[in-house]
Amino acid sequence: MVASLSVQGLCAWYGDRQTLRDVAFATRPGRVLAVLGPSGCGKSTLLACIDRTLELTTGTRWTGSVRLGEQDLGTLAADDARALVGLVTQQPCPFPLSVLRNLAYVPRYRGVRGRAGLTRIAVEALRQVGLYDELGGDLKRSALTLSGGQQQRLCIARALTAEPQALLLDEPCSSLDVASTASVEETIIGLKDRCAIVLVTHNLGQARRVADDVLCLSAGRVAWQGPAEELFAETGPGAAVLEELYS
Image 1 (cartoon, rainbow, N blue to C red):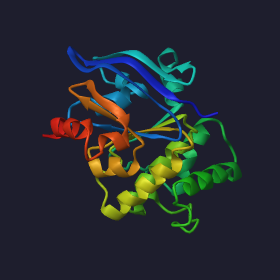
Image 2: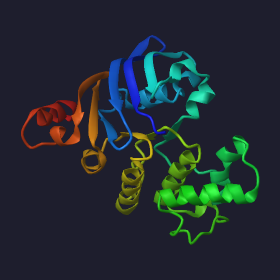
Image 3: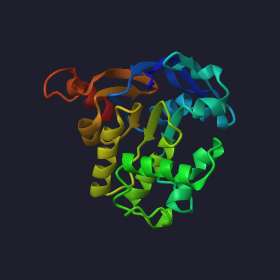
């Protein structure tokens, strides 16, 4: 069963520097939440807290509550928490292996054995991101021969092989061309009923196209949150919020 993602009272520090201050929001499968704000406002730190990678950096800490359904991720071992949350980073980072071996990595770690089972999982993940037909079913192809957009969708597919309850996307299109960006955006929309999706982006046009809800951060605090259509309405408070954030 897919679960909602909720964050309450989230604060984070790098040493003595506080980067998040009492952040709270909730989102659920079926709605894409876009996180907006200027550089340095805490967007990537927010994702790092949710998937428990922040604590991999020496001198960092966070407090607050991050829940997937009834599960408090802060009470789990870090590896167990990360198994519930998929993270796709700004730069596509496929392994220098075949498409199949990229997608078999997580299932193998989880104990899946046998080529037939691994191939089935890989094919399903590729179909979910619209890559299987593009590749002509060639799972032996090196992942490094794919285009930038295809590599990013492969990375999303690799995250999906862990069957995450939430999918975090940190500027996934910032290094892609227009056509590749459109393909990734289509993939995001197609996946939103499968799990809770949080998309960090600097691209307001992308947020308009993809997001159902928006969370705006400024200096580590929530500056605005609500439905995307309200933020991007021609009249109303959204215009003033965007002007203040990006002026």
